[in-house]
Length: 89
Image 1: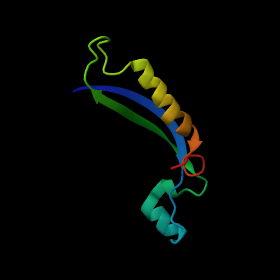
Image 2 (image 1 turned 180 degrees about the vertical axis):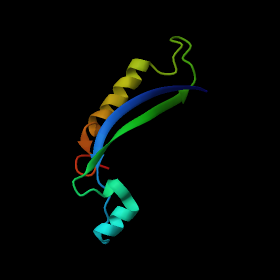
Image 3 (image 1 turned 30 degrees about the horizontal axis):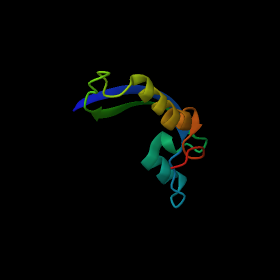
Image 4 (image 1 turned 180 degrees about the horizontal axis):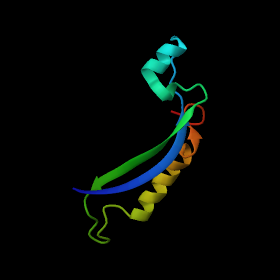
């Protein structure tokens, strides 16, 4: 098997908070991620696919197709979004 990997980057906001806990406990456990006004991160990810080499193309997968899938299935859903409010799980 051959592996093909593509790095991608996106920015998103979120908040970690357990409503059952006090503000102080949330801050103790989650730190800055418990900020009541939310906060953001820069995320780096690597998507890897594996498979045999196609004897006609020499590809495991067309890199252009992989980029399109990453954009449509991940980046358009999370980049510059609020992960708690804007993204379906």
